[in-house]
Length: 156
Image (cartoon, rainbow, N blue to C red):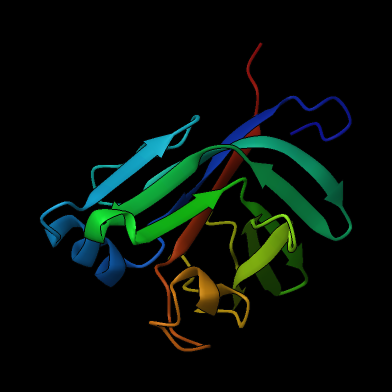
């Protein structure tokens, strides 16, 4: 992985919240879409492609792709887009695009090895700012789906 030239590949694999995915999928008009480079994995998670590594101390990695959850005649709309993972020591945060008033929001925070080379993916917890994203249906600290970060050098 060459941070200086951007010659790297990878993705963030995250299901966000399995109970929420099930809820939306079971709605009569529920829809879930992955676009802009994000795609659905066979296990229900989504893959968000690496766009760039912005810094290495602390590590800040930007991801492309958008996942939208919609239902209830348009009253339910949750968009997860332009993810960013910030890793500082053993802790990490997952941010996403927000609103004009709050351009970035921290969805989740976690502790543990987010780079999954030989272990189990780590489950972050819902951050205070992330509560509004789910319209207050989940409390601060609710466990979210495990995240897995895969990175490697690009092959020429």
